[in-house]
Length: 229
Image (cartoon, rainbow, N blue to C red; front, top):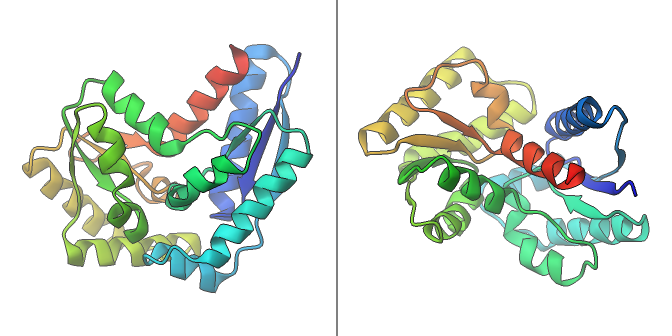
């Protein structure tokens, strides 16, 4: 019996579309048939994007997510994914109100780090992702230490994410991001998690000083494995 994937989209429009396309392509290559996918595009304003990236777990954002999860439940999705790291601060309460299982990008990325036997990893993400400690707590369950950016570096990363979303990032932004990764390496990080789905758009083709763990790709592969098993 074919299962239906429910995607909460619009939390970085380009990333949502790329995620949907990639999952579709991977499953089609294995099964010779496209999966049934329903995407619910959350009507996120630029003001709300700014708030949540800059460290504000807005109740307005929580409501938008709750409404999206509700619609995907009604649409008879069999599994729900949210291809955005930052809004996983709400995942516990979203799971409480969903009869459909919701996969976690934080959990799947942490499992991947464990599988690769890393003992210490750097984490790049929005201010809310970093300050909430989501990755730190999840990685700790796998006895993996974390290295996070300094305060001024984190301020730059959050502003850079907004620039990526608005397609305004520059070559200089890439260079500064690579320096932050180099600093993490010097602090003992064996790899760096791209803990914001939009950061892949900045660093995809760059040779980083340590291996990249692209949370988006990890999440795609975890979903594909679930759907074909």
